[in-house]
Length: 395
Image (tube, rainbow, N blue to C red):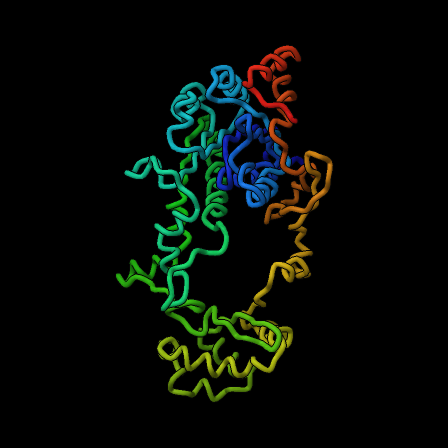
């Protein structure tokens, strides 16, 4: 079967996570994604191990061309790449693409059927439109850090670049919607996604409660402020699990399973409202029941009986989880130097998508000559451009 985006060409001017992760989704759906980097490489290549992890995770199966976009010849090549493209994606600092003559207005004027997608830190229309934006700033200014952490401790960031990753999925979703519109009506579109909007939208239930009551949520550590037990930690003999059982039938079932039916009739715990008010006392009672169990015993007790619970797992344990192994999420690919390494695939499955080409992230300019040849440049042209540092070729 043909993958959904077979024959679709994407030109990706993205760096770090949000834009490259979005185009990684398009690659895995079958698109030909051309990664455009500066001749010295995108910024992620310059920050060591963390940058290498980003590159390996979000740039599989792409082709890479290295261009000096400050040079008119580099800009000409970029325009030639766009001439044959269906989608352009970028997350450079606001105004940078415009300075190259590659901003949305100019490109869409020349190519009305094109989908042009931009991801920014704070949106393109407010007073902070010119600010550089990173995941941590969005976590801070969206309220995520305000509600994360223990009640009597300082705010905490989520332990991974959650907003960047979520913005990539939102961006890909919007791009696909715009592309479907083009297929149906023949017109391109301009897509805008900001880290700030995504970060706020991720907190939908919190914002829903706030908009209903006017009461802002507060940090409460593990557990949820308005229901109990919910996302509460139960230490076991060899680890810990997290448990949610706040509805009436689930709380009653939990109490029966741990052989504490008396808790259901206890005045401190007889309704969700009083369980929330007496959460500390509730946790003392529940944790006493799990303290003598192993994690496996606790899971075997709860999950077959419909109580939501999860092992708190280290990364080593996640890799060995048979459910994770069954997904095929971890895949082996070949790097530009021919060595094999393991990385992440996409977290979805389509019958029409069997798998990628098994290529890892490309090296700087790995496909520069190949792509220029497709545009009609001769070997001598390519050598001349390389000598002038307009393009970068593999080292």
